[in-house]
Length: 119
Image 1 (cartoon, rainbow, N blue to C red):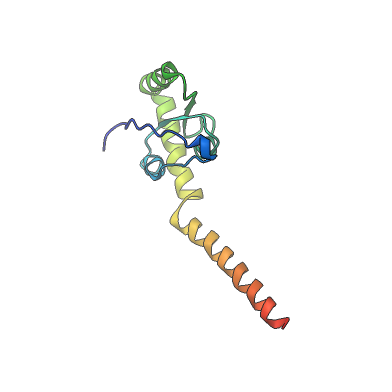
Image 2 (cartoon, rainbow, N blue to C red):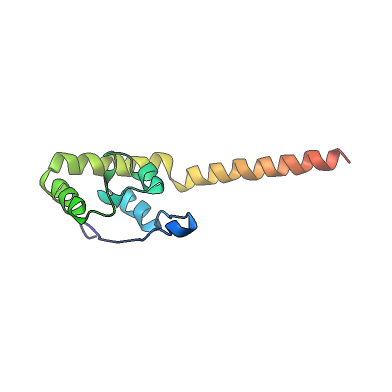
């Protein structure tokens, strides 16, 4: 596993859309500290210095500074790594997603059941 991976994803701002790449979740699950652009979706996942570092997407020097900061500060690197794996295990696990989906499906089922009983 590489100590880092550089990826660039241009947001589809003209359509009001931005995605959180699945590989971001894989990086976090692997404990890799991440440097990501300041977009709402990514900010919610990474947090402010919790699981990675957020930078201005239009300022390449901020990316370089963030990478150097992670490289040169082993305690920061360890904190980001620990927080990242814990976040995935506690908040983004398949079990958590299954629970959320089960709630949605149960609500849909109960709604339709009530609608049928009104007839």
